[in-house]
Length: 193
Ligand SMILES: Nc1nc2c(ncn2[C@@H]2O[C@H](COP(=O)(O)OP(=O)(O)O)[C@@H](O)[C@H]2O)c(=O)[nH]1
Ligand SMILES: [Mg+2]
Image (cartoon, rainbow, N blue to C red; front, side, top):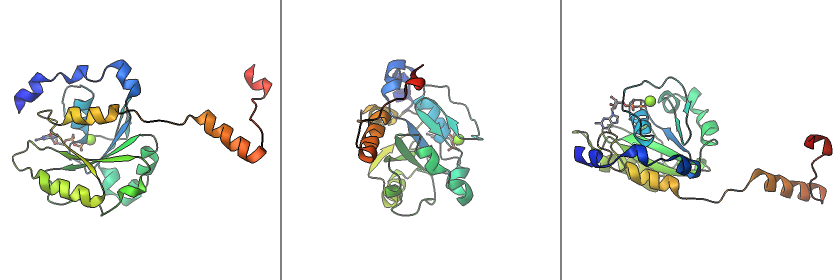
């Protein structure tokens, strides 16, 4: 499996142009489940241990400290950050003896939700169990990954590259204006100066 990693140069997978087209992934999951390490691999960074102290926003990724998924008073903030992303990655390590997530919660997110089983290379890994728990949570699309070997990482990148149609803010505002005032919106001339 180590060979797999050596054969793939992840730093070239995310090029600057593709970055603009990629959807933004937010990583949610218990502390130590491997979110930050996966973030480092997805961004082609060197793997070093770093305790995530705060919500860290990057170009195509948002990495949250596990405490946000673990404590109810912080969990309320997750929806704010999912609003800033396009895809919600619900992470669960293949080594977990239990799942933090209640059943059938994914419909609460109005973003694409994917389940990510992490650490599949671990000697104690049970990816089938982790996947079953993620499916119970409501994840229909599951990726099994190892940040150490790189297995499965490019599948996530491919999924993030799938283009989706976005409605631009201006046309939504114009529609709302039309509905409310029965005429096209006009920008006041002094705004254009
Ligand atoms: N075996 C294995 N260990 C991993 C993997 N990803 C992360 N780890 C280890 O798990 C620990 C927690 O990782 P980290 O990314 O900081 O977790 P986070 O708290 O979810 O951000 C670290 O010691 C990592 O080296 C993986 O794919 N395989
Ligand atoms: Mg972290």
